[in-house]
Image 1 (cartoon, rainbow, N blue to C red):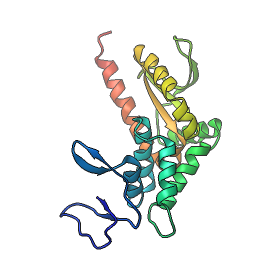
Image 2 (cartoon, rainbow, N blue to C red):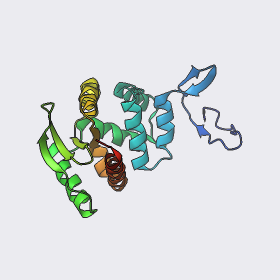
Image 3 (cartoon, helix red, strand yellow):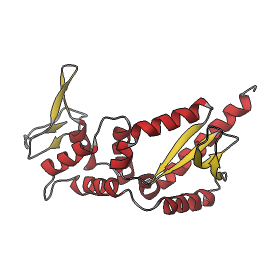
Image 4 (cartoon, rainbow, N blue to C red):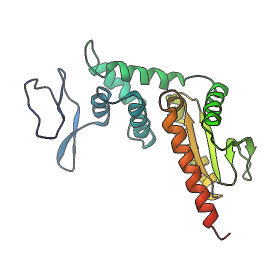
Length: 210
């Protein structure tokens, strides 16, 4: 809950965010709630870096957050001493530039994946539908795609990415995208999540009568 009343007390069990500037809100099913950019600004003050990265990227992936809206929010709300400002400025900077190169992202991911004992994937594989993928776990039918693009570019390419993933799914393949944010701030959980996906897919394949 956000408020500009610095003396306000929140209801029991509800965390109150006090702001010196106007809180961005909207009506949802008859209830006043904070907008997605305002909510992210509030969460930036309390979430660890890796969790905040995931929440922001999930909001983007679900088409709930255009980059320009978050940039405007930071410009309007950010100021000296306001918690959450450095975290969101860092996220915006990284999403604009896209991190390092594709090859560097691939190297870092593969080094840590191998060190964790992960199942080695095949590299740069041409698929039956005439598309080349970065990583392939063939038996599990899982594709890994490196994504070092800036957020602006990923936003622009959102529809083509979904079509590419859907085409892979039509052949029975699951696509897992590996971003700079995941590798830099959330690598351990990213590796654990991928290993779990491969185990689940391996179990599904073993039960498939075909």
